[in-house]
Length: 295
Image (cartoon, rainbow, N blue to C red; front, side, top):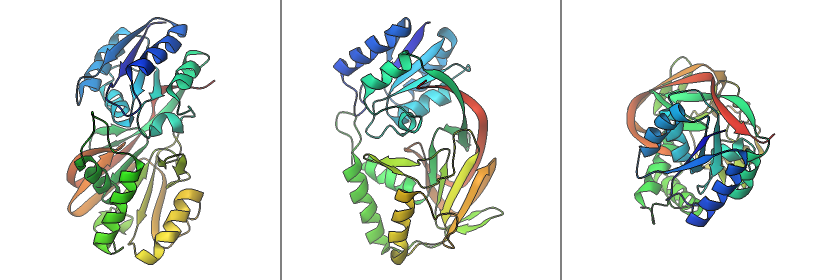
């Protein structure tokens, strides 16, 4: 079975030696041709071509490149995601280990196709999460720190930056946008699966009812104050309590969500900054993608 392996050589956990090892593991299931990305948006171009030429596509990279590939596909074929980023939320949420060689081995031997839903916001697909407001601002500020050899700063930088944002706001986040038909909120987190992301080894369970096979879940604080932050941290680690809180809006398994901002606000998908928007229209693409997962 012929396959393409799309590799981002600048991803945090991608090296030439590991790329060769991943190639060897995947070759156990058939011929593999490796395609290296050369810059932003190139993975989408490679995916468009590869989806017409191969029976499967594997991607060894971080979440940003996975997102590009999913947006570039021109034909419905199975995709296998090998973790090569600092976080690599998507393959971990699909049940793959963080070790790229072990993941490649599992994908080559007995991986089963599974259909999952995707999210879409303002026309851009996302695989696991999107955010409007706070977490998108966090992504933007970490990106502004710069990248070393193309690699984004890690979890420590994210934590420090988040603490800096809270300090600037004095732990106070007032309503700045309207979830149409639902209510006003300070910022919005939209999940396509549980977990929403990871902090090192720990899953961040922002939307514990979200599932790849369902629609989208929205978690949005009506407002946020410093005294509530310990409770928010508990929700994210324990994965319970969100739906019952008077401080939050929680919408489960939605086909569509529309959010209108008081002023242009940052938007991110799968950890990638999409710039400022005045309105975000989220849609669930049910049963949209074939992914390979451990058998």
